[in-house]
Amino acid sequence: MPKNRVQETIFTIMMVFVMVYAMIIYNITIERGSLTNDTFLIAFHELIFMEPIAFILDTFIVGGLAKMFTFRMFNPREDKQIFIVLSISVFSVMFMCPLMSLAATIIIKQAFHFDAQFIATWIYTTIKNFPMAFFWQLCFAGPVVRFLFGLIFRDDKKKA
Image 1 (cartoon, helix red, strand yellow):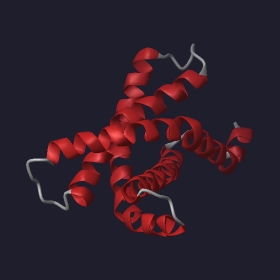
Image 2 (image 1 turned 90 degrees about the vertical axis):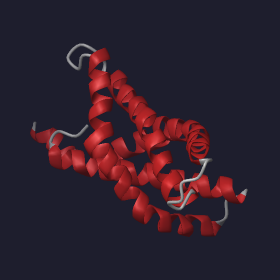
Image 3 (image 1 turned 180 degrees about the vertical axis):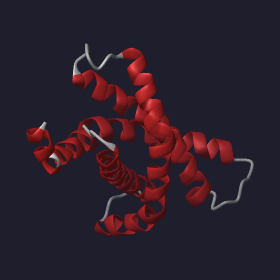
Image 4 (image 1 turned 30 degrees about the horizontal axis):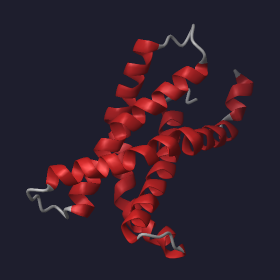
């Protein structure tokens, strides 16, 4: 886990990339009805603007909320680290999914044209994305990013 602000920023960049890229691929696949090789390239076009949005939301809003709610339930000195990690992940998805679905609804689905279906489109997008975001975070993105982050900063653990 990150030990300082620089590590926190690097961890967030890594996690945001893995989560946002996967969710864009998922949404393009759902929209097209199939996953093709070009989906992976097309996803990079949306990643250019969705990744900074996710980074800003996570850094300035969601990360703090997820930790606040987690540390209301768990004490890092008494509870197992896995419970804290899982709780932060769950709360992150709970807050990020509706916010990123809102961003996608505004930018991609509605193209900045707010009509009578805006709220319905946002809710539908959130409902569609939540199961994928939840399981992707808990079963793949979270473990992989934490593993890679641990490899990058393992020297810091030896010095401590």
